[in-house]
Image (cartoon, rainbow, N blue to C red; front, side):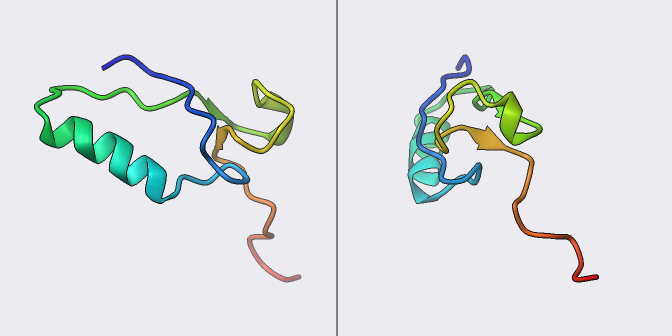
Length: 64
């Protein structure tokens, strides 16, 4: 299954919607699933909103 931009992530994080969406495809027999485009920084999102997947976090790795 080719990648699709579903614009369903919240602040860059996948959620239950993604689990159901991709899980349904996997149990339905799809052999290969290429997940959505993923931004590596907030400026790299393809939309200005918060709906894109991301590998960035607004939470610091450690507190000082």
